[in-house]
Image (tube, rainbow, N blue to C red; front, side, top):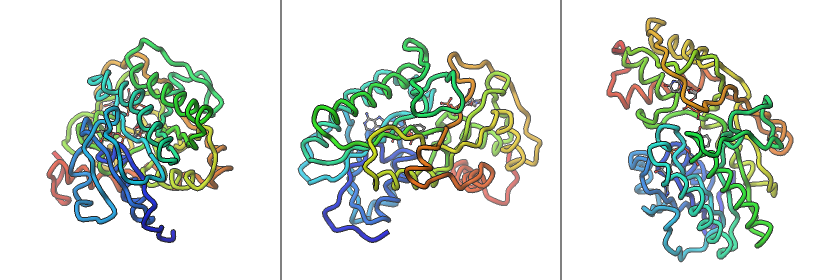
Length: 326
Ligand code: NAD
Ligand code: UDP
């Protein structure tokens, strides 16, 4: 992509997290100047350490709901802050809800004042435990408002509603993506989501912790595919939600098998643990909208994405590539 003029600037929240740090790299590569915001609730300084000397990157340590005034002109406000891993958002329920409610409003207000466009990272979790399969954007969801995932699901639903309200009331030009399970390097080893858990467990020669009987399904998207979808959506003027995910669906037991093969030659045990309440039974995106609108579809198969991710976790766990795990 052609380099942009110096003034084109993105304010990107959640920049020290898994997705946000990769998105910052991609935007800078594409010629944007990035002001990254994060409060390190679940993010890590090491994810953005490589940007310390990057002239087109500036970092502001702040919580989005208390974001100070920004003097610079801004062309896009991209809201990717929010804990995303169930154990993490459950450990910080109020912080999660404030980030997605007050934080989203604060950022929409900023976009409104600056005449900037607004980009919301929403989630497949707005569909809850879905009654239709695969999930299409017109499905309004099945969410338990008082369940153990509600601090995340409901606050993301609120964030979408607030985004629509600012568009209707003030004309803030917005994009909404619903991200389905995405993985890759820079996830924290203690993140708690299934891919980081399984890979780290396999690397350590520990049993893989399958919750329930492992027949629940998810569809796993590699980070680079998500970034491509985000960048393409920025180039449209489409305001309604767009699913971004990989439609290849796996049971959690399938995933355990793939990880086991890839990391530990099939010797790692599986241990079955209780299934958390309200854990969605099935999840797979219908990506017709993204295909038609963006000419986009994921290119990276699960096994290939995991092959790119395992060396990162090996490094995080301090293991030498040539050493046997354990
Ligand atoms: P992550 O936990 O790695 O990153 C989230 C980042 O947001 C962290 O750096 C954290 O410190 C920061 N943050 C949290 N609350 C904040 C606040 N109040 N103010 C400022 N910064 C704050 O998670 P991720 O996987 O990178 O997720 C990024 C975004 O994508 C989130 O909005 C998440 O809901 C969404 N999403 C991700 C996935 C996925 O599978 N990775 C799926 C659906 C949606
Ligand atoms: N899961 C699992 N073992 C783990 C972590 C998660 O079996 O160590 C299951 C979890 O119950 C869910 C699926 O894997 O059915 C995906 O969980 P994750 O936390 O990654 O994301 P989400 O539930 O938000 O899709």
